[in-house]
Image (cartoon, rainbow, N blue to C red; front, top):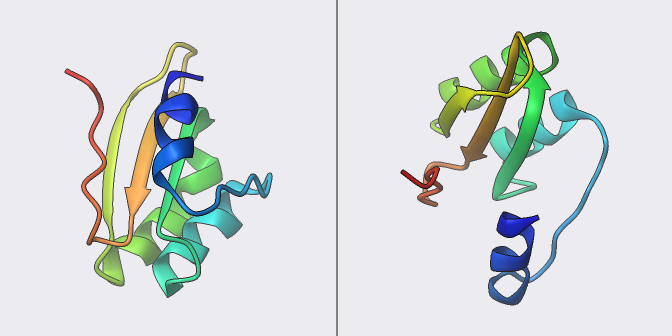
Length: 85
């Protein structure tokens, strides 16, 4: 919720599609600028992540709270999305 409150006044529009693979490839093709997710399972994003990286996008991830889950921030390569240190 912290990220959501921080981003809302700074972006034009936020969309919640509900499909991580679709959101990730939308970033890869330029339809979306970024994708942020917390607690996502690796198998939900690994194929889209590969496509995004091959398209020049950037991915930052950190281990999530649950086993085999990750917090991810993916961008088109032009945005700098970092986890708070």
